[in-house]
Length: 475
Length: 139
Image 1 (cartoon, rainbow over the protein chains, first blue to last red):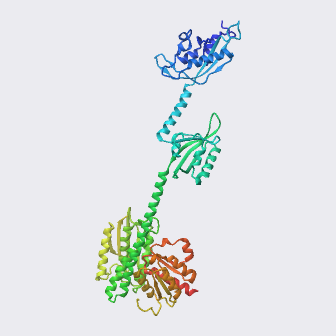
Image 2 (cartoon, chains in turn green, brown):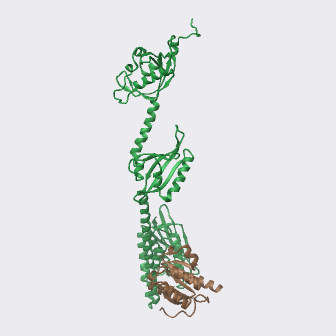
Image 3 (tube, rainbow over the protein chains, first blue to last red):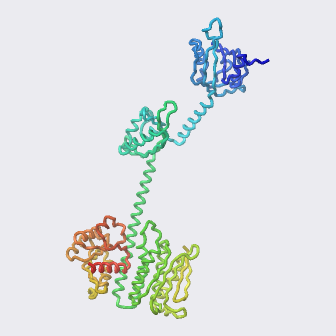
């Protein structure tokens, strides 16, 4: 009959959740509980009677293995004091059945047993409680190793600043960055502060204070240092503040990178762009001035010419040059230098054409209907000449009864296509247009068909309520 | 020069103006002169440098000046327009291929009647002058 009020202490020993080994003060094993045997993969009969280090020989490949002496010292201390002794974290590899050594880390507590009823104050045995902390230790070490490898791989300058103690733990790259020889300076941070650029010193201090005030906040430093030879380097620092789990001190950990070359490249690029912009502005100025000179010369020649036909030809040439020139006046009105806001330009051109052509005797309206549209400069020049020719033709050849009107429209015409339409109300649909006889108009017709093909477009002429020309070209 | 000043103004009785042309390119200057005379105004002189422009202005007291920005000998049209405005209360019409050179501060001090980009449509100049005449008659 089972009596729950009585239990064999040996059963309790075996049931304990911690691994326990009992040995005499000279390290001869007397007992091992089940948890211990499981942990070390041994049976009790493999251990009992052996000395601890006969059962668990030191790893011959581990030159630092001095576990036996340490354990003996701890056992001696238990005997001498009659009190439990905690051993420092220990590394003792365990010999496996296949002859390999398994890396193990141990946390050990040795406690006294007083088993001799005749000498109750004498320690007869030591009960050795072993906790396997291999996973925790190796995990930490693996993380640290990964961090070190990552830093070495990236050649990073890693630092840990302790603002309270004013110390700086750092990789050797940090010393090199700040122009210090290896081991030239101690853990003090002050020599590093001393090399901060005077204009950046206060900003760096303020940022470090800010980051130290709030644990986990991000460090964002962008600063200069002055090396002993007087040269200035640009550095950036990135990191965060953390609280040391043991000491509770605040640290700022992070990296610094030298970005001087990037900064210098940026500055060089900025200068190059400025020089280019200056050059473009200068060329643009000269082109505009030269075009103004050409139109001025033509204006002067036309106003002085006594021969009406020559004067007419000069005026037609002047009008064409005006159309081209005005495009250049429209260029560089905004940041985009490779295209022109063409609808805005057309407004100028049409105002000019109405006034200059009306002054020849008739009052004619020009109606403009233009979609907001940017055109590449070369296309814009060609198209402006086409508008000039077509509108001029209407003024020359339309037979207006009552109010004359020329309509100019520009807009999208199907996908990817643009249509320019110039039409007038100068004749009825069945009327015959004034014969084109003079050489200037003949040139005008040739120019229009030439320009249509230059735009890669098609030209379509017809008479509706007057003359109508439509040029359709790809965008 | 390009003939006699027009005896009758085409501006329907609006007063004709006395104009100084500040431009270092002779063709452009002569063309401007012809256009201005064609509108019925008088040209009091052509100046190619800031120094000449200011001296001519002090002597002839024009009603308005047409001012190019980059002048011969490296002098600047902005400086001419400023002296004309501040010392003689003469307004300017700025004509240039580089209008962007005129800063906001320049604009505020010079208070130009107009800023015209080269190359000019003659009609644009005509409109500015028509406006100048109208505001002058209104005074």
